[in-house]
Length: 242
Image (cartoon, rainbow, N blue to C red; front, side, top):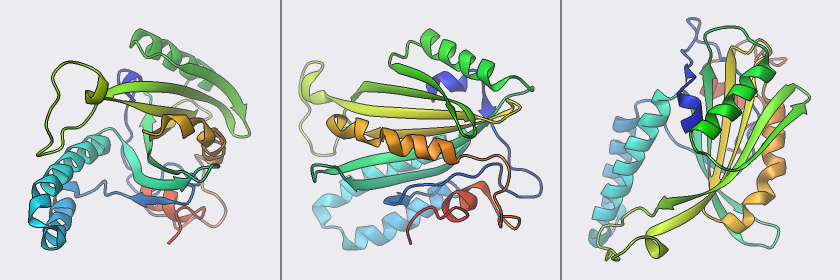
């Protein structure tokens, strides 16, 4: 979302508490908290520490601390949903992934195609490299951005750090982002899919297209009593399996 941050701002929750958008999520994701993050994860850590072996408690604290910072940052950036998933690929391999759905807003009405064009320019100026596709979905235009990033590998407590740069200290991550604007160009839904299993990443293109195509900025039938955006994402259109 780095290229989006410079021209967008997080969308505030409407005064009536109703959802700003609706989306259908695939099954297989475990949702992470995006409200009361610190207290929720602190309670989870306290329970897990009772079950974790003593030599793994330092690792548990490090993981919880990392998630606390990450989720708090996502909440500040307008994220409405964050989930971790495990999926079975076509060849039977188990593929881990993360999925983040966020709502952003722009200050004025504009042609949504021009908004997406500005995002492509912003990504180029931000030095982001990847495959860019502007497509027309049933709901209107959408932007897909596909890339493979090389990121520092997180340090695990007790793990010996290697000297030098690159190799085992870095990790490649496959990312596919879909951006769907509202018809008046004042709102954007960004869907970010990431997996460290680069070889299987492209198999999730169809899933991302289906999610992007399901985005709606008006309530679907039967959703008049919808609550927050996060509740709508996970419940109104089926969302996650219980």
